[in-house]
Image (spheres, rainbow, N blue to C red):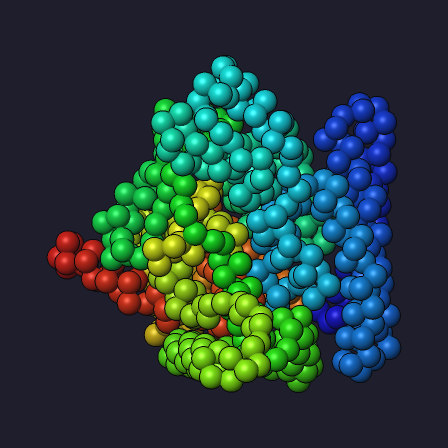
Length: 546
């Protein structure tokens, strides 16, 4: 199906959606339900924006405008509508903030005006006053908060899509983090995800299987007592893993955990996002420019490469960053020695007041990313219990040098059979042929498509759990490539248990891509996948693992 036919097909969907909007409005007027109000608000605000983009697409492709003119036209639309889209997000909050947080890790999906706004919501969504938080705690516990906590810091540690966390002290002086769920979060989430599913059913049907499994997984996020159990389980798994000395996961306080309140160990350190900002500030100071200039310069380079159909330029490797960190330390020492030498020589004659020097730390970003990727691979293939929502707001740089991994509201538990099938897929993607990949995907994992198109199946496998740079998408933007694949074939059935593993890979790759590092998860995870298959083969004589 050509691009014009694709747009015309979406035009038919627009007509259906118009009917849907009218029906939603009528239902709202009849029932005056808050859920319908939210759904109507979304359609009333978002639908015209979508129409503008599709109309522009039809216009430009019909006239066959040059790529440069198309990019300029889209950029104008992005600048115009990004503020409106994020006004919708901030008005409705909840699931829409969750979508923005996911999108914030995908610069290949989101244009810069959207990406900048989405990034601000990674762990800094709109919060509620501490008085409301205390009232929720007291209602959940059935007693005054001062009977449990000596203090609760009014400033949130972080704000997520359904709740927020505060530092607090127990009566015995133990420092803890208290995570509190916002009222109505669960009900609004249910309505909002149905609204997005309706939207995708009309305009992006390829995303429906993913959204349906995400809905199931998100619903587990509203029971903090269950999250405490997951937290304890994953923490115990990591404690006996090769990552025990590198990764910290907070211990829950089960006696103080309810459906609405989660109390856990407080991990002392700073957010990874703050560490990245310090890293950029150190580079900017060394170059004599601002962080804003660095970002703008990188965005310019990215746009130029994208216009040529090229991928992002990867950042410096771990060894280069270690040398650079030593170089900056040597420069600081030289400046300090120079100032001391001046003070004790010419300084007696002409004293100077030295401006205090800010100390920024170089962060070895590729090492951090690799560690995060490796530990999640271990959780998936070895433990079968993993966090399905890894994003920058859930990672801490601890004072003792470890990485802190927090927020286990979306832990997925998969069976041994599913772990082994995922391992087989990884090995096939890393070392096998197209036929090997398709055999594992369809015969072992049970994935079905309407047309059983081999090209589509291989590309979907790579997009789901390997790589989605332009070598895979053939020079296209990832979202455009997914829409193109949708014209060839579509997924008819995918077992739910695999979806969250694919989502974890997608989020990890997106976060790495955002920081200008590209990883193939098939290549990165093939060793642990082979180990798991080999151990299974040894435990079952005569059984071929692959």
